[in-house]
Length: 251
Image 1 (cartoon, rainbow, N blue to C red):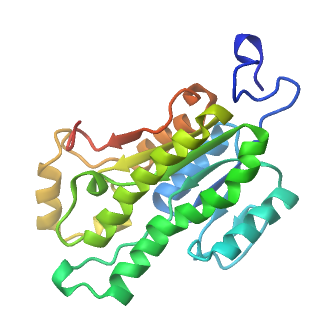
Image 2: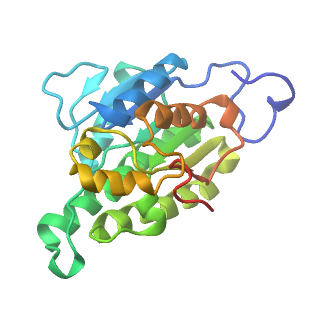
């Protein structure tokens, strides 16, 4: 709820009503997504977890293919009706299909990665924005990557999607800042996860040697940053891409 000197500013939530407190987190079944969902709940959000892998469903756990726009729109409408007004989203769902570009298959490597990692976030943003604009409040956090900032051999598809997500987020921020809606990216580096723990030990050591902090990041650290960007304390932070990589990439 907004009161005091900011109550009348453009985009402020009316002091006579509570801001929407339902958040949607995609890719929430494990790892960073699960940690973000927990951190948001600790911060007072009512979180709907979305993942393509869920076998059981409830109002708070839903199975969804984020690449299917009509399904995303229908899911958001159902959440609005069954749970409450959506005030924030975290687009965390993502996949990799690595390979050098001269051997990359368009149908099985390029298109699926672009569809999940870039079109998926577009679909959810597009589905929630009309109501966010109407209510003059929203928090959007898109999960980019350090490789979207610097590129990565063998990941032309992934780097392109994550770089595109940064550009889309900046456009979102410009279009919606006056309506109390923020849009930001998080660009994680080497984070301890099932995926990185599966890397061959010698290659893992090579990657760790590149990190000035001398260790991988944790899902909880990424989740803490996401929780801040979704909070009232970050109301004046928008259009940013915030790196969390132990000093591996700066600037």
